[in-house]
Length: 475
Ligand code: ATP
Ligand code: MG
Ligand code: MG
Ligand code: MG
Image (cartoon, rainbow, N blue to C red):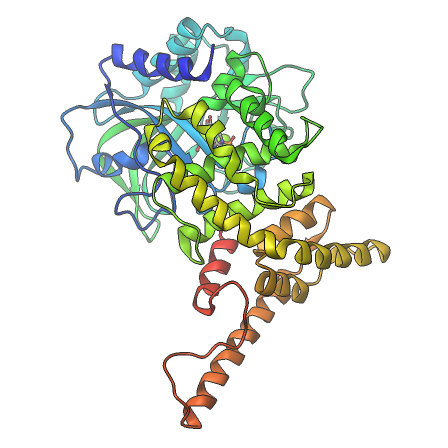
């Protein structure tokens, strides 16, 4: 079954259970400064959960565009390393606004997975929040999932492993305990079940999260009960497609294979298994959808995240052998795969390609020099068995060659090297101070003054550096 059909079956299943099919909202959250990009299906319904907004329906279903590259849920560093993470993905969801709660949510999920998608029951495992006996009993006594396939997991504060069964949209907003469904891709793949030491492996892959929305978390971290208990669920279309197409990695599904082939065509890469091709296939989706939704590459906030993703893509193309703008040439392939479901891609096609072309042409002017400096430093490190990349050099790369810190860090990571971020910060602060002092001097000397003077000629403007670092630090 193609991903397009899987998406459609999901929406139709919930429509048959009285859910209104609602269109995906923009990747740029509407009037929500707490959120960098839309990171889950529930975002567009945040105010409905909080009781501030009313809709003519109490049940909804969506296929929502999501980007997780910054903010609370940040998967940028996972792309290319795990079988299941993308920066852009589609989240299939069903929602109850004070209508049904745990019992129906669990039963719908099970029915869809085992009767519509016909997944073998023995391949599924579920988790429930540590003390959620109600959800446990529904899974065990009503649905019939055997005890050894149900794992209780708390919030990860103090927990032994990374998994977390308390879902939060961000530091504030609607949240609640959740129950997740995992698929066992088989013994031949490394990894352990959720809540075990091997849970970071890719054998048991989380496909669906059912959140029992009960609280609103405020800035002080205090939980307030929502007006009515609600349901918010999210299943990654790419992950369920991998399961239904009998492949392990999301990158092996129909949609990604087409993009990987296109990336290989444009970079002349011979090895279709190269992780860089996966990164390109992932990043062309994130970049194109972000541009379609109005984000443009820039030095601050959302625009800077987009710029970082584009530059990471260019660097992977460069690694494969590309020496001139190529990334924008993947846009038509993306439109061919996803334009039918997302008309904004078709409408924006020319503009998206042009924005990308300009951005990459600019970066191709400095990447060669930057890479030479970076490689030189890495070679010197390797000769002395060093493992820490000089922060001053990282700053120079950032300032003069347009290498965002996370790009340098990404390259270093491939060689098992970390960047001295403290020295990078210090170099940045020093330069700011010098620029400020130069401004003061000019004022004292009675020179014409129309704002803080800058003496460097790098890519980024001074004012935004704080933002850049802040973004980098919180992911
Ligand atoms: P993981 O633990 O694998 O990182 P998550 O717990 O962070 O996933 P949720 O916030 O629960 O994910 O989101 C709901 C669903 O969305 C997940 O069960 C998964 O199917 C999908 N999903 C989440 N993050 C990604 C991603 N980066 N790429 C693709 N699908 C994702
Ligand atoms: Mg995650
Ligand atoms: Mg998870
Ligand atoms: Mg989850």
